[in-house]
Length: 250
Length: 311
Ligand SMILES: Nc1ncnc2c1ncn2[C@@H]1O[C@H](COP(=O)(O)OP(=O)(O)O)[C@@H](O)[C@H]1O
Ligand SMILES: [Mg+2]
Image (cartoon, rainbow over all chains, first blue to last red; front, side, top):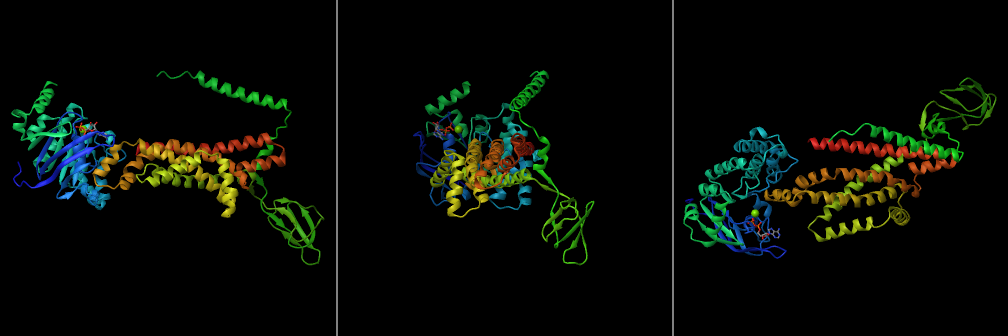
C-alpha cells in the first residue's frame, strides 16, 4: 500500500442508467489513492467498463458524484478536456488511429491539446516508444503491428499526456494469449514507477502480483474489496467465491 | 480463383462490334448522309483573327499578299501576316471590311462548350464538397438545430428534380437577386450535389468506429479536434469512391444548365446541329467529350485512392 494515502479519485454513490433503461451502476462508492494500483474484476455485464468510463466522463452519471483531485468530474462547469488530459485511458480494442504511424498516434494529443512544439512532442513520443519496447516501430501503421504491439503503443499514447492516473479497460482481453505477457510487463513497470492505475482485468495473476487492492463488481454493485492476498484466498463473500470458482474452472 | 479464359474478352469485343454494325445498318435504312469529315471544324476553327482594311481602297492580290491602294490617293499599303485571303483582285474595300484572316486556329463551338462545362462542373464540385461537408457534419452534430437544418436541406434537395430546382434558381432567385446564368447554374448544381455529398460524408463518419472518437476524447481532445484529426480523415478516405461517382453525376447533370442561356457543351451541340444538319455525328462527338471529362475524373480519383491507401 502507498504510504501517502492521498485520495486521487473518489466516487460517491454513483448511479448510472443508460438511456435504454439499463441500470449499470447501482450506487458505487470507492476511493483510489495516489500511487495505488486497483484491479477490478467481475463477470461480464457487471458494470466494470461503465464505472471506468464514468471516471473520465466518457459516460455521464445519473446521480452521485465523482471527484478527481477534488474536482467534481460531472459538474456542468468542469472543463472535461482539461480533466481528461490527467486520466489516460487504454481500451480493450486499442483504438489506435489507423491513418497515423505509431509515432504520430502518440504525438497527436500533445501537439493538439498541450500545444507542445512538434520537436518536443516527437522526442517525448520516441522516448515513450522506447519505454514500451517499440523504438523500432515508430514509422509503422497500426495495421502493421501485432495486437500486443498496438496495445503498447496505445499505452504510450496515453502516457504522452503525462496523466495522473491510467485507466485500463481489459487491456489484454483482445490479445492472442502469447501477446498478453508483453502488455502486462509494460503495466507492471508502470506500477513499479508509482503510477496510479485502475485496471479492469480478467488476469488474476496480474491482479494478485501487482494490485494494491482488488475490487469485485457484480450486477452494478461494488460487492467486495480487499488486498489481493486476502481477496483471492480468504474472502468469505458468496458471490465472489462463486465467481472465482467459475474463473478457476475455465 | 482460376483466371478466366481470354475467350470472354473476345466475346465482348465481338458483341460490341455487332452492336456497332447494327447501328450502322440502322442508319443505312434511314438514308443518312454521314459527314464525319466535318466534325473537326466544330472542334477547331482554322484561320485566326480577322484583319480589317485600314482605309477605303482597291485591292491587289498576289498569292497571300494583299496590297491596298487608297481611293483617296497616296501610298499603297501591304497588309502583313495574312494566311487566308478573303478578297479578290481588283475588289474595292471600305475601312473595316475583312480582307483576310491571320494564321492560327481558334477553338470551335464544341470546344468552347466543353470549356464552359468544365468550368461549371469544377466550380460546382468545389462548392458542393464544401457545402456537403458542412451539411454532413450537421447531420451528425449534437446540436438539434444543426441536425434538423441539415436534414431539411438534404430531404428537400433529394426530393425534387434537379431541372425544377434549376428553374427555381434561374427564374425566381435569378430574377430576385439578378444572377447571371453562370452563377445560377453553378449555384443550383452545387446545392443539388451538396445534398448527396452530405449523405456520403455522414455515412463515412458513421462508418468510423465509435472507439476512435472516444480515444481522441480520452486524450483531452475536443469533439471538433477529434472530428478533424481522427474521424474525418478516415471518413473521407472511405467516402472517396462514392464522391467520385457524385462528381461524375455532376458533370453529366451540368448539361441541364443549357436551359439557362448558357452555351455549355450540350447547348453548343444543339447549336451546331441546328446549323449543320449533322445531328448524329455531333451528338456522338458530344457524348465522347463528356466521356473524356468523366473518364479523366475517374482515373484521377482512382490514383488518389491508391495514393491514400499507401500513406
Ligand atoms: N451504451 C450502452 N447502452 C445501454 N446499455 C449499456 C451500454 N453499455 C453497457 N450497457 C449495459 O450496462 C451493463 C454494464 O455493462 P458494462 O459496463 O459494459 O459491463 P462490463 O464491462 O462489466 O462487462 C450491461 O448490462 C450492459 O449491457
Ligand atoms: Mg467491459
